[in-house]
Amino acid sequence: MPLKIAVVAGSLRAGSFNRQLGAALASLAPADITLFDVPIGDLPLYNQDDDAAPAPAVQAFKAAIAGADGVIFATPEYNRSIPGVLKNALDHASRPYGQSVWAGKPAAIIGTSPGKTGTAMAQAHLRTILAFLDMPTLGQPEAFVQWSDDLVTADDRIGEASRAYLQGWMDRYAALVRLHAAR
Ligand code: FNR
Image (cartoon, rainbow, N blue to C red; front, side, top):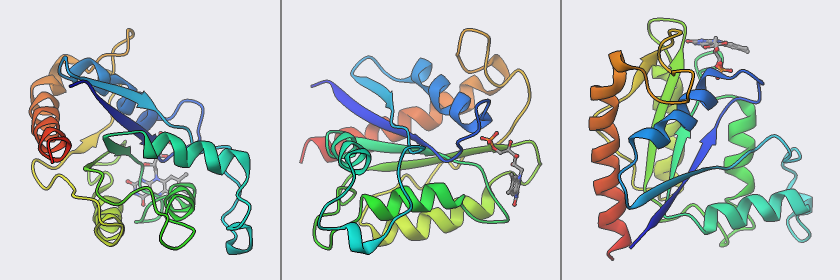
């Protein structure tokens, strides 16, 4: 059965390293799994007063996540946590109460930063949020990826130096997705 994985990048920056990394993961996906980008930049700031009549961008975002068999979060670290734009997206799709579209979707977390400790704290925070949202999340291997200009090739593939490691990461995540899809 073909499976569809949403890729949510936690950065709105045009040249985002994390969006580039998230997109390039498609080159590692096995034949039965397709990755698709779900943008978060059009979402308004979450306001609980709007729960009864969510904006079209919110409805489209929730529909995209609802239609996915899993979600990969490719996120930078901002001030030792996740960017506000990503938390905003997580909050939107968790509401109204009882109508979260996250629950049960197998998740994986990856992040890249020019710094050596890149994204470890943000990933730890995101893991806590995903646990509350009831998303079974890939535990190992972890993927704290230091950005370098050869991480993503000109034709949007993972560069050779990181390919074997990230292929292993993808294969473990694919197994988690298949496990949950079979339920
Ligand atoms: C950063 N950056 C950063 N990096 C890091 O490793 N830990 C951190 O806590 C922070 N904090 C932080 C805050 C803010 C507001 C910005 C704009 C940046 C640097 C960050 O890793 C770098 O800008 C990445 O390139 C951001 O990811 P994208 O946008 O390239 O995907």
